[in-house]
Length: 225
Image 1 (cartoon, rainbow, N blue to C red):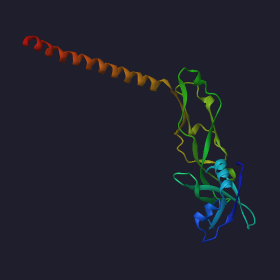
Image 2 (cartoon, helix red, strand yellow; image 1 turned 90 degrees about the vertical axis):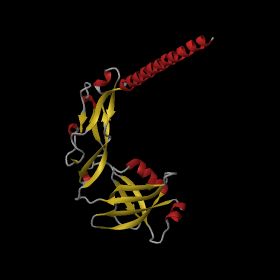
Image 3 (cartoon, rainbow, N blue to C red; image 1 turned 135 degrees about the vertical axis):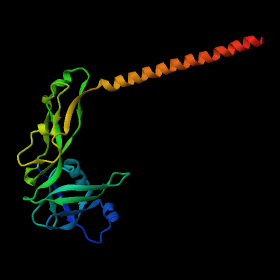
Image 4 (cartoon, rainbow, N blue to C red; image 1 turned 30 degrees about the vertical axis):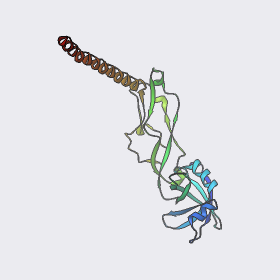
């Protein structure tokens, strides 16, 4: 199971105004989940920001609510931010149950050296950096490893089916999806060279056409003399 991160919340009054809360360095939020009456909460802005940086939307969080016995194990489900300042305006928290499976995205972490990188111009093209899974809260992995040593040549690829998935975890991302695949970094350069060569040909043709147009004009001037 992934290690949990702690967060503290306070009950939020029904008549509290979001602007007033934000001026007091507090962020409004709601806690909801199956077989659970949703609760209006508020969080210290700085502490919530730290937790969001650490947990994102894939790590389990241990939530402590002032005045309540016991802690809740939750996930961040939605974060509303100011479109200009990116300040946190509101947060939705999902309350998990130990015996109820949850769906979430977990990060894919690349590990090892890919032999294919010994080929000049080769690089690793990452197609997926997260995996959608379903499992019980106690089985949520902190990340899933991508073994780059499997990439031995330009025909190699690692798909979802090649990943080592922990027991008790069901993968919802299509198993034939590419995770990483080698590619040549020189392809874009070659295309730019081809475009440059085509542009030079057009310039040459344009110059030749201009010379042909000037020649008859010169002949006409000579006849008039």
